Amino acid sequence: MITSIRTQRLILRLPNQADAPALFHTVNGSVETLSRFLSWCTPEYALSDAIKWTRGAEYDAAQGLGFHFLAFEQLSGDLIGSCAVTNRGSALGQDRIWNLGYWIRSSSEGRGFASEAIASVIDAARQSDRIDQLEIKMLATNDKSQRVAIKSGARFIGIRDEDISLHGKKWPALVYRLTVTHAA
Image 1 (cartoon, helix red, strand yellow):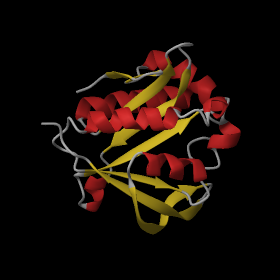
Image 2: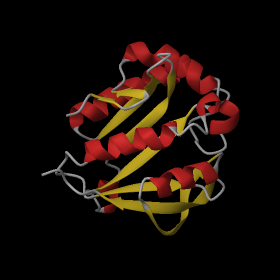
Image 3: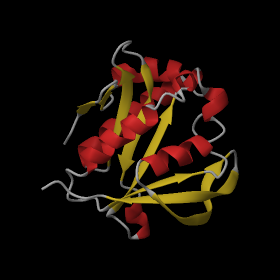
């Protein structure tokens, strides 16, 4: 299992509970932007939510259910977002199709960090013989996420009705997929 990844500008690593305060502050500094696309990101997001998330991420990694990486800018050491590969397809009978998700704090958007982070996580996914495809889902209004998905090499496969829950409503998801070529 890969526990950390270094890119040109980022350090991505699996979280631990000591990261919860930084996660809490990063999320709260970006609620206005992130809450438009992520159901868990609300003005009520609390330190206890960050602690719960870090515990869940540790559990997922230990069980092989997913790998949630926190992204830190190398120069400043600041937490700027998260990128995760999770096995959510097994409930749909698609256990070799894993979900790829990502978010970047508002003040770091538009600098290519999301693309840099997911490129490294895609490379890490190639080390797994359990992943054949990565699926990226987003709201149609999330133009930035669409550009990141396309830049990663993912292809648009269609719209899945009522696939995203946000603010008590179901929304259609744009779905992109990327075939993972395994490392030799």
